[in-house]
Image (cartoon, rainbow, N blue to C red; front, side, top):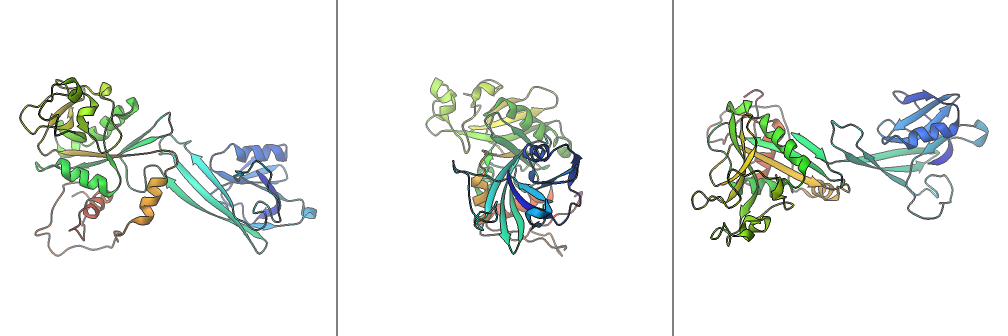
Length: 349
């Protein structure tokens, strides 16, 4: 925490508490994940969350008003210079890892504090682990990675081919779902099961990651081909010890049934099998580590964007329907296909 002589222009909506000392006030901000600054007025301590911190006005020592900023110091030495924490009017930076709400995926907040004409101001950028899109589930792991699930479904019999799913995943740098962690199993199953009512059925096949290699399609029953090495995956290699198979991983009922699927059948235990035909569900999952840099790069390098307007097409003739889905998923389907330029969505239809 870097202390300066200053005073906030407003404390509206800012969290406040009664404290005995200035050090206690600083500690309160230091230990709160979303706090970037603290200010004490009398016996009241104000701790500013990053989205609530507005302009801090520089004051003089005689005023006795002190603000403490939470910043990063990567150097082993204490910084020096005028107008701390910007020290010589260089931007002070910091990163906040926020995961205190178990109902919301974790995220990083990267912020800059800059000095201009006697005031300090802050700007920030949020890097959300599950992105800005609507997600169906998430789970955090002990190694600081997070799995987020996105479900596409079709209530008709056309479903989705393996190639269609892979194309969509590649477009958005997602991975098809796979069980790499024990915690993923329950999250994936829960994400898929809540869509059973929407297709008005108790059973569905979920397209997940994994297609048997060309060599192993000829010899699926060898120990090598029954292991994870006998399959190609779009994302991290899953752990087959977490898979409960209908028979085993060598299953090949007829030639060409080489794609792993998850079978959701009412309240029965979820099992895995290998099939080839079109499927009802698709679970798209991307896995990001705590740096989250890849997704940030993706966001800034997209060559096309979707622009929303209030409107309705005169005709839906020749339009391709994907069944019921959230609006964000509807847009993503259009964005993923090179020949699509417009998507249309109507609530409850």
